[in-house]
Length: 527
Image (cartoon, rainbow, N blue to C red; front, side):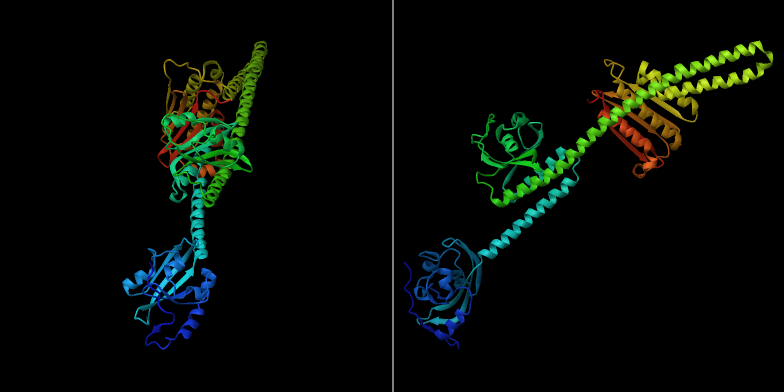
């Protein structure tokens, strides 16, 4: 039961303003509601703001028990600052949520020199509605978190080199945010035709990975999000969750399509901490994060597609080039060499009939034989028949032998290693490209490296083949040369020969310590 109320206006003390009318004028000048209360929580005076903030007239409030009027409680609430002010003997300020009126209040209680008629201390009690300010502050704080997280995501996306890395970056960023309310479990899919392919995941078990490895559009929650382009937040117990596995407990999902320009490129599925739906702020963040990933994914996919088209075109162009080389080499060997040989026979026939022409014939014969050798050498460089007839091992071995014979100062070690059960021949496009890359690398060594030793190794490794060329020459600044188009045409040619095969070219070079060229290609050429 509330203590007995004090009689209105019973204030006393030595303070010069200790008159009811003067105190009332001061209280009414304050824009938010103010109370004068005694140590027993009785309201002695109020300002006119109580009408606006509490919906009560001053006459209804003065003399009443403060907890009942303000908090609809028969006893002081736990957060009541007056209780603490009495205990401390000083001022107290705090922010309190007023559940009765659904608002946040800034409360402050200050001791005064005034006393009630029966000697109870009087306190000045300020109450200011800070709901709007608090909501604004909270919104700004959450917006700062939102934008900071998006900034970090955008920074991560800059360094992604393929589509899978984009999904990994998105999952890492989202699962690291404690305020988002998601667990560390997540899965990311990429669209492949009318299917979703699991590309990135966190903390999924083997059964989950197996069941969700490939989903058709419309299948389960992820497939529905891809099909409709809409977000889904539901329990695993819902009808839409139609993939189940042993030991699966109830859980909640937030499924977000990753889109760009209304085209769904992927889906990210998050596991929620509880069944509470994500609030608007969190959903907006996830949409923004998915949109950022969608833009990065669209750019990456466009790049990968252009690269595939370029490599396919380059592969065809190189194939045409090799065919043309072969045709010209055949013509040089079969036609030009034969014509020169016929000319040689004709000269010999004329010289046998005219003794005076013998000296001229010998000189011309030497020149023609030289021309025949040069034409044959040109034909071999254009397209060595040994490459078509006997394969890479023999063709490259012969080229290296001729190179070493022409450059006595250079020692070239050549090894071709393959498993006994394998056939010795590689697919023709692989043999041709590795032969051309090796030629270019060896010619560069002779022209620029000043090397004394070179090692050439071809090694079959299961489904791929490795070409490794190392020298002990002067080395060079690879990055600087690569930036200079005029100086790196040979390097570009090597890259363009490897790329259509689905292979990689890596060059490492250190000044005064030599250079290593490493080429890896699959033994089966891509379509």
